[in-house]
Image 1 (tube, rainbow, N blue to C red):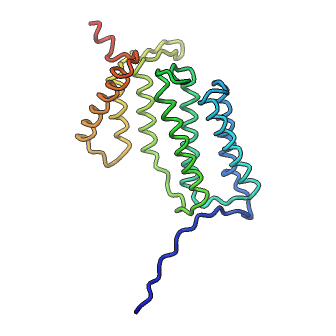
Image 2 (image 1 turned 120 degrees about the vertical axis):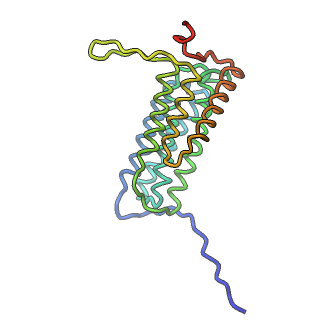
Length: 237
């Protein structure tokens, strides 16, 4: 009867006492803590969203102190820095939408969805960050620029197309007309599809149309938000 050897389970342990101090690992959460404090100043400290951001600020500052005091060696850079990047994205959403209706309390408005998504993203990202501290990961490879570039370009296109924008360039006034929710959403989804080299355009177009219809159904029909649906300069003709 032969003995079978069971594979050793992967232990989760915080690696401390490293001979050098990882300033990047400590400085990144410290900068995010300052950002969280700045974002929290725009909200009532006694409100739920205000308390959430101050707790997140304290947790990030505590993480930086722990890394410095214990000389923590980050063994899973992908999860650790990826989680911190997502926390920064969530804080950016809360800070940028601090003046939107529905960002506070239980009232619905343009800021309700960003608030819920940003809080959920921050909580999930915090779990990913802690996982990066206590597990070993593969070394970092090459950074893919294509995906983040087209996703950010899609978000920027949505911001320009949904309401239009006017700005001055060397004394000349340049104006982008408002194209409305349908065109802006459809353009955003199609531009974001370029982020992958394996995109199948027939499926992507069908998906984009379906997601655009869902956005209209959720934000306009169900929530009753006063979004412009179609380009006004076309309807005026």
